[in-house]
Image (cartoon, rainbow, N blue to C red; front, side, top):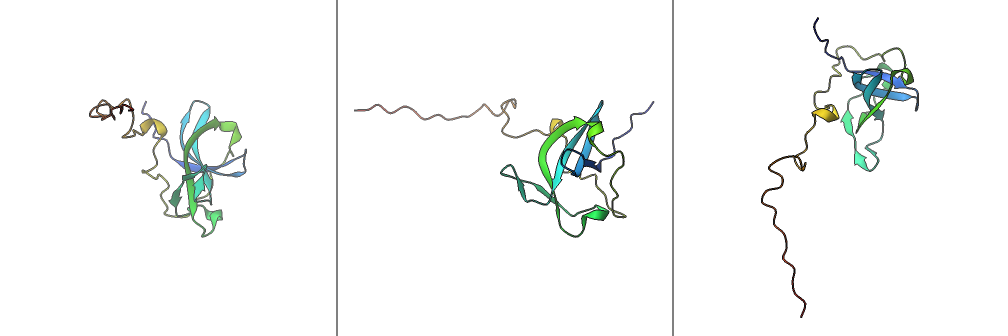
Length: 123
């Protein structure tokens, strides 16, 4: 049996009534990013994308960078309609488990060559 690649899509998130960008599933939960019309969320910049939703209009869409998980029953049963010939796979948006930050302490190179200031003696 072949592993099926998860197809990213949009659904309505019932907790806020807005669309959510579903990137993966884990058992009975979806891994998703919230969708908004705001440039920032929680003091951080959001990803700006052309609005692919049929009902979305011409206003740009922003996807919140923070990844969330919630039960599948908190989402609409139907996927939202996408405009024709629009790809919503967004390869630049990865699951948090796929991301590696350059300033991570787990990186073996990060702890090397750190210079510290010497304490000055008071006279």
